[in-house]
Structures are given as C-alpha cells and as structure tokens.
Picture 1: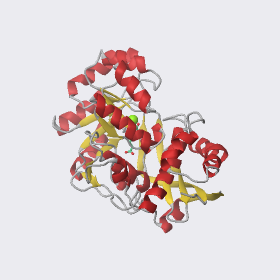
Picture 2 (picture 1 turned 45 degrees about the vertical axis):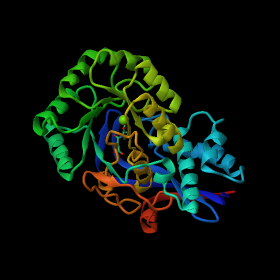
Picture 3 (picture 1 turned 45 degrees about the horizontal axis):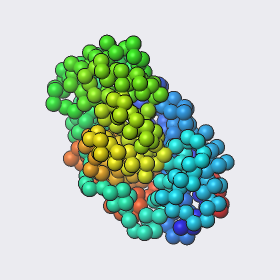
Length: 368
Ligand code: SMG
Ligand code: MG
C-alpha cells in the first residue's frame, strides 16, 4: 500500500466528570489522532499517551516529537507499507510504544478498509458482543462512590473496577461489597501506588473476593510483584509492567501475575497485543482489554480485540458516555451489559467531520 501523507491531529475533549487515579486527576483528554492517507481509503490511529508522563513515560508532546522526527519519516521512506511491516521497520527506535502503536493502528485501518476486512476478523475475533467493565475513579467520599457505582450497575455494567491508593482502598471496597453484595464482579487498580512494605495491608483486601488487584507496585518491580503474590490471595494482574509478549511471558514465569491487562497502546500495537493474548492462552492465563479513555476510534479497535477467545474477563471497554458527552464517532452504547463489535471495514467507525473539527487544536499533513 502506498501512503500519500500522514496527518497528525491534536484533539482535546472535555470529560463528563473529573477522573481521579492514584497519580492525578484528569479534567479533559488531550491526545493525538493520526490519519494515514492512501490512494484508496484513509486509516485512523489513536495514540493513548496522556498529556503528562504519569501513567507511563510517554506523553503527548513527546509522542508528537518522536512521530515527526523519526517514526513517520522512516515509514514514509518505505514506499510500500503493510501493517505487518510497521513494527519490524520501527523496531530500531527504542521504546515509544504508544507512538508506534498509533501509527500501526492507522496503517492497519487503511489496509483493512482497502481490503474490506474488519479489525475483528483480521485479529481473529469470535464474539460479536463483548461485556463491559467500568473503571471508577477515586472519590471525595464513600456516599459519592456508592452513588456512582449504583448508577453504573443500573446501567448494566458487567464489572466494576475501583481505583485505589493508600488511604482509599479497604474502605471503598468494603462499602461497595456491603451495599451491592458479593455477587457483583469487583476488582481494584492501584496504578503502582504501593510498595512491598504494604503487603500486610493489601492482604486485607483478600476478605472481599476481588477478581484481581491491578498493578499494585512499581512498573519495573516484577520480582516485588512475585513476592507480593506469595503474601496475598487476591490474584495480581499487571498493567503498566507488561509492555510486550516477552515481558508477559517473563512475568508469568516469575509468578508476578496470574492475569494480564492488555492495552494495545502500551505494548506497541494491536499485533503485539494479539501475540500477548496468544502467549497467555498458551499458558492458561486469563486476559482482559484495558482502556485509556479512548475516543470511538480506539474503542472500536479495543472492542474488536476484546472479542478474541482468550479475553475471558470483562474489559475497560465502557460506553462512550462514560467519559464523553460527545464522541468523535457515532457513540458506543451499552446494550445488555456490553458493546457490539463493529463489523464494517477497518475500525468500522469513522470520525464525524464536524465533531472532529470541534475538538481539534492543530492538524498537519506530513507528506511522502
Ligand atoms: O478507558 O475505561 C477507560 C479507563 C480505564 O482505568 C482505566 N485506565 O490504569 O487501567 C488504568 C487506567 C489508565 C488511565 S487512567 C487516567
Ligand atoms: Mg491499570
């Protein structure tokens, strides 16, 4: 496939409510969208990096720099480009997986649209509908938390994830269990807020029959997670630590996690995400699809991925209105506790031009 140009577009979207995690509070979502222009269809990519390097080392300005200076020029110099070739071609540039993932996604979307194949089919999806979990931020009070959780449960969400940090962990979990019972699927996410010295405290969560605790320790602390796993009964799931199929295999071998959160952006793209899925299936480790407050574009691709057979736990694939009053695409709507997997060519969704304009800060074409 010949690429004529690649557009880098910076968008900013207001959130329906502030989203607080152990590393900070977000009021809006600023991100980069990429459009790969080909003689046939255009392809869209969404970069999951946040404005500040708090979830991960990558951040919007840094991603834009590496894309402009290294990744896009190198890819354009290839001439004939396929989605399968993007990762190997850019491998020599260390790290920057979120930037690479966005580029690969856009190329893959263009390629699949031109071939009339959906993301879901291309990835090997089986299901046409995937259950939705919802990620609930840290709140100012327990009553406020219970109200928010109650609303999501009445919407039909299939699983609740509570963001936790020291000082907001056992109490919110206990409150949610007391109010909504033992049957709801419940898990927590610490975003690296604890250390191994907190093992005794974290063991108190064992009483609440959680599906998992996500990323309690530092992203580089695989050995610490393996140690913690011997001290608590709640299964450990890694998010930030898993950046490739080989780190996934290493974490599992080491006993650092029993469950893996797969976020395509964090691991360099949907193709590596599928390889992680395959490794986990082979090793009998359940996986689920993580979320990064995606627009309808990233959400469409995530829903397709979440429809693969190894995704046996509900993902952070919520409806568009969980974060946005208006999405850049037609909204994803919760039906029977989940979302319908798009089956049109490529992502199966396309940005609405007016919406896109409304949210755009800057847009620029980089030519071949
Ligand atoms: O898109 O539903 C979503 C967000 C899910 O909690 C979520 N993501 O660590 O898993 C995670 C976080 C990362 C983003 S927090 C700003
Ligand atoms: Mg997480």
